Length: 124
Image: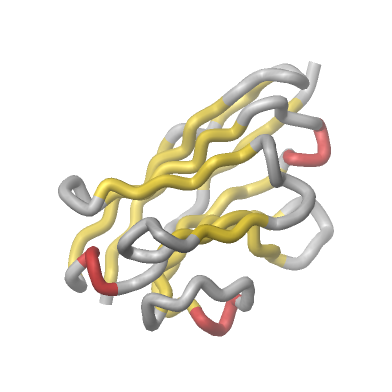
């Protein structure tokens, strides 16, 4: 089992940036993929970005490509999501998730452990 704690959410104006972080503990960090999901108001939870443990494979939702960057620090057991050029439609609760394997899946069922979520609000 992996304990995940997100931080870095908040209120930002359209066009602004935020950096989310996820600190992990428990299962050996350098053995599984990590991802960020989000749940917008009234919507299902959706995949945002994921990265393999060796950082050789990353994947992004089309809606965030070119604006968001996922990274991980295997020495510090953390994963980050740099979010630039934020839009009001990025407003959501963002969740960090640890996969069952090193495969970067876009499916919720591929992830065993979840953080509590951090709110991101993009508004003027």
